[in-house]
Each structure stands twice: as C-alpha cells, then as structure tokens.
Image (cartoon, rainbow, N blue to C red):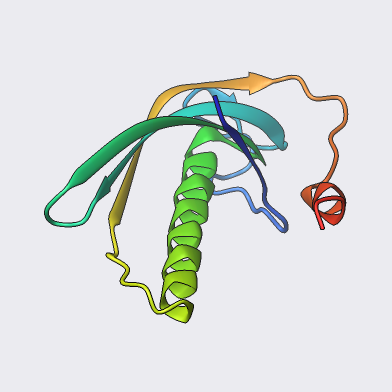
Length: 120
C-alpha cells in the first residue's frame, strides 16, 4: 500500500482557536493518517482507488483540503509532462472522500527535501 506524506508549510487553522472539527483539536498541529477514496472522472470513464496519506496539520478537514490540492497539483504536473512530450492528456475531475482518519504519534520525521536529495 502506498502512503503519501504531505507537510504543509505556513499552515493556518481553518477553525477558530479552541473549536473542534470532527473530534480533533484545531489549536495544534498533529499528524493524521487518512485513508481516502479518490475518484477520477473524465466524462467517459471513472477510476476509483483508496490511498493512505499522512498529513501534518491542524484538523481532518484541513488535511482533506491539502490532499485534494496535492492531487490536483499532481494532475497538472502529469498534464504538463505529457504536453512537453507531445502526448495527448485527458484532464480528469478529482473527488475525494474520507474512508478513515486518525491522529498518529510521530516523534520525529525526515523532511521530504532531505529524502529527495538522495534520489538524484
């Protein structure tokens, strides 16, 4: 199973300080493990899959917003790469839904930029 890690920089709380969203506190960042059902539609076809994301943010609603943004950016990257190579690209609509969500304990994590440096 593939797990995507999203760490938002400059993340701001969506809800007022001290309020609750889906039972999770919004006044401090936590890591959330979110299993998400993703549906891609292009007008003719529909592709559905479930992916797990780990997101460092204030609440589950904000995490879903970040996941949707991440997926749309990835779709745009694929479109750009296809066009650069002269390939046809069929743009898809992306719909997300939470299958499950839970805060997870994370003592330390390795930033993505550090890990990516070793892939080159």
